[in-house]
Amino acid sequence: MSEEKKKPAAPEKDKKPKAEAGAPAAEGKEARPKKSAPAEAGAEAPKTAAGAAAVEAVVPAAPTAAELLGEDPNAKKIIKAKHAKNIVAGVANILATFNNTQVTITDGQGNLIGWSTAGRVGFKGSRKSTAYAAQMVAQDAARQAMAHGMKEVEIRVRGPGSGRESAIRALQAIGLEISSIKDVTPVPHNGCRPRKKRRV
Image 1: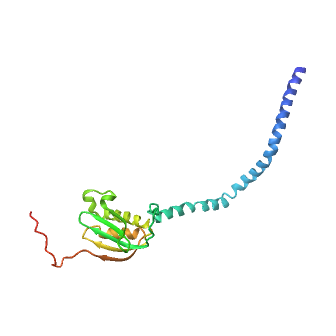
Image 2: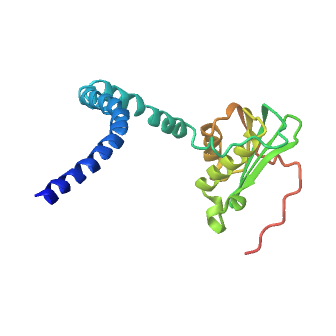
Image 3: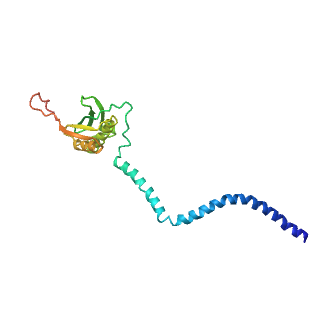
């Protein structure tokens, strides 16, 4: 009997320190659960109104960044050059032959700012003469020029190749203002001796 009474007494002593040790923690936590309980209760109600408003506020942020990137897909690649020349207006010379397309962008005096060809962009063989290659060439040259601050361009087209129009469209699409377009293809007027006839 006495042993049985002593045994329950020991657990009671154990329980008391546990309760005492747990009491400060409970006192510290009591404020937290009280706050969390209303927060949970309040969270359930605002999840429909305030929570939805918070979600709506967060959701538009992602599309705006995506839209900004979508509007200027090439904006990432245009980084200001280390020694930027800060030339706002220039001349874009497009040479479109049957086999290749070259785009050279210069300033008003003819000093080179950016250039590109179908071979430099990565095309080989018969693909160099395509309109798509001309588009890529124009974009590459325009990025180089825009890195130096180019904004406005006067276009001079030369040659009968298939990349004439696509190169002009690519320059406009990348964000350069086109002030004028001139065709400067050389036309013979019987002033020079013609080449010898081709033997077949």
